[in-house]
Length: 227
Image (tube, rainbow, N blue to C red; front, top):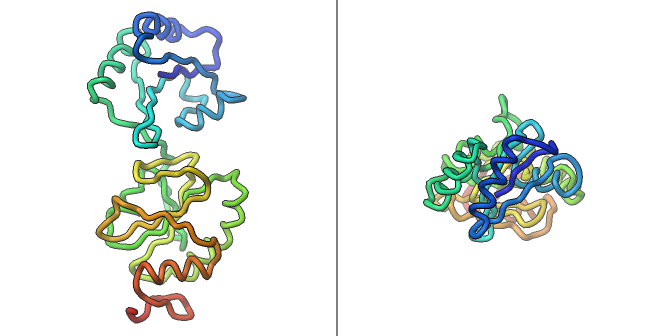
């Protein structure tokens, strides 16, 4: 359990310390800053910003994925209750999300945690999703290629080309070990996305989609006859 604050003295931190003395045998208690250094990277990793502080998160790794749980009340009783609920598996994991876009009508759709179901899962379309980081050099190299892919295939009725900022958004089905990561969500098996590991060129991506969708695209890259 991690207590996030940039203040040297918080009344809630005193409450946190009381619980730590009592429960330190079975859970690790940590205090972390939010601004600067490793603290800022850790805060970004678990979805905490300066406006949230002071705050606390329970974190664990499960099946190779980081799970995070919000601690609501930072009193001694509230922290104990959160830990008890966590042990009893009563807490729902928290996933980062930006605000849902007001409009989303460009060829490459924008996915955030809050609209993941609508754009990716709750339809009978193939969805190619790139998860990227704004600071990633390889992502910046892929960006014009991916945009051109979206432009060329925007009229394919049963295909969505989409992207998600993986530093600000999460979903349990998206397991990212590096940026960029590209997944294909196929109708009938959306719960088992396939990771694309081919070349990051326009031709390779189009060939991959043609193979997986079992069809050819015409020169305008709109849908044509089945293979």
